[in-house]
Length: 394
Ligand code: N2P
Image (cartoon, rainbow, N blue to C red; front, side, top):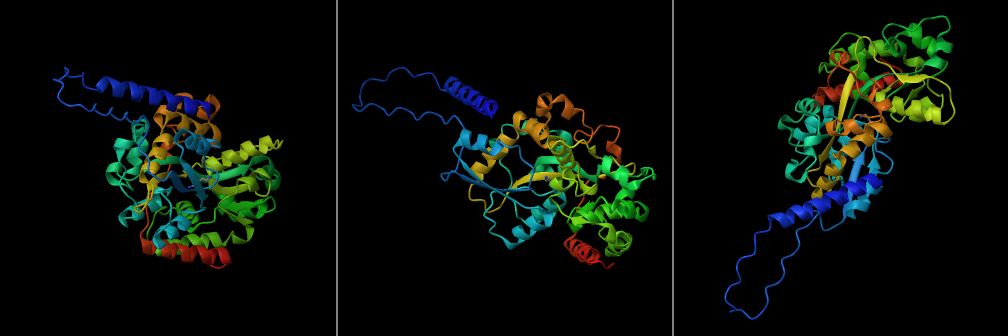
């Protein structure tokens, strides 16, 4: 918290100093004709341009922001932040389609951000207000162009991947003398394994666009297929393990940390949070996000400013605050997520930097399945297929 305030204070001093330097040299005094003294020029504003109403409304995923970040931003800017959360891209999308969200900043994954940009839900960013923009990792910005050509609307919040999370201690017990599979996805999709692991709890994310793509990948199809016939095949595979799934939830951190689920299809960052939380609670269980031999699905969550945002200047101020090296490092150090901020790397704790499920190394990168998008029709078909699977059908 202190660090942020200090950095902002230093920035303010620098801006003020620069402002002074750029002032033109005083002109020689003219002949005294006017009687009234000229009014003193208004001092150049030291901080970012803000909206009159000192409010900012943010809509983000749960368990996704360092504990003090909002308070630090509020203290530095005098802006009051209202922070709400959603659990799936589908939920955010429905809000945006309904319109008048009241939110200034929302955090879609790129799979949804692409159609949302095309639908005109977001306004272009004013990069002149983002002095920290250059901190971003060009490799991440290049991935974002698939959803946002020319990087006009989106900056990364964090990226990670959807994978198998495991409580190794509990899963090993449940598997008995059965060895761990070579392909970690077998743990959540293959009946030989799920029938054993059901006793310690299998959890799936609760969203069609999270589960169908990994199921497609598992059966050897394009994870981002737009063909509903492929979804039928995926759900036929899923139907075989349906009875073994204990939980459908997109907020499963405590379920994993507390022992309700020993294997999960989840987000690597959240599995790492669960591992840390279990330790804090005194558990000796070994919990980790796996790097499946056949690959995991990377995702990129991004900040976007809504088209009808009432506080666009405040939104830019927050985005710039988030793009600072300190904020980027806090995302890794406190939240186990990679913010795609290059300038943050020297501030990342060595233990976090060494965690290959937060900072994925070059060797695994070719196995990451990059995100793509679905047509509206495909998403509808996927939702129908997924809901039928959840209810117990095919
Ligand atoms: C929530 C993280 C959300 C990542 N903790 C999935 N978009």
